[in-house]
Image (cartoon, rainbow, N blue to C red; front, side, top):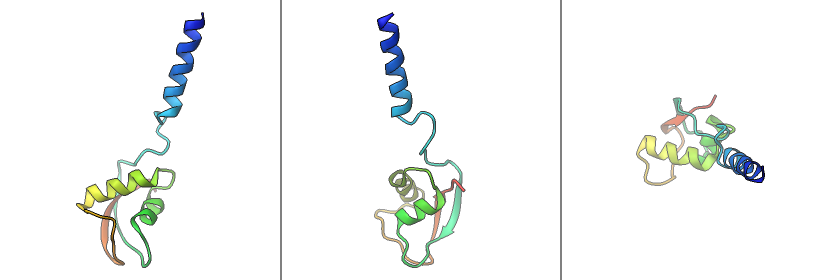
Length: 84
């Protein structure tokens, strides 16, 4: 019985500790947006994928657009994950 309880606790910990439920996941859907004046990639990530982990969204934006860094400029078009 104790082993069964321990196994259940481990499974629940893995389920909720690793985000298996999908909360905070980077959306698969994408959209093309323009960077607003004063915005950073972090801002774009939060605007377009609310509820997702911004750092993961920023990394995906960099991959989608072939960016080596995080510098963007107003009016720049970016393909971004979109949870909206």
